Image (tube, rainbow, N blue to C red; front, side, top):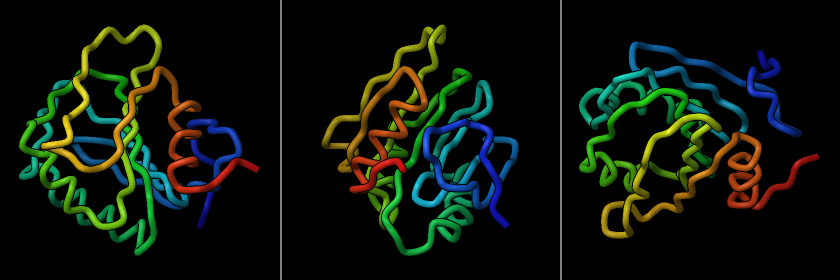
Length: 139
């Protein structure tokens, strides 16, 4: 059953599914997966494997884009990015730092991640970038 998502993305398709655990809240739109990681978490392959496997089942076998809405500070193990490269059909990652969040983030270099990565200051910009990456437009 689909419903409207809580992010008010312009022209967004209906929300298809949500997941939540101690690490993150995840919203699945048609070809967009939007994630908000909990404050203070250290993201690595070991603690995210179950969430990634479950999530891949929802995106099915179609191109998709991951949007990280970084509302809270958290750490990402740099070795984690090599596993991102193995996720089928993932076209790219958008990192969103909402206005007022003062946190630095270094975009992984091409040696550690071969996916497209972009940083934004709001969700609508990231969403439009994701659509362009997927070859889609808003309605």
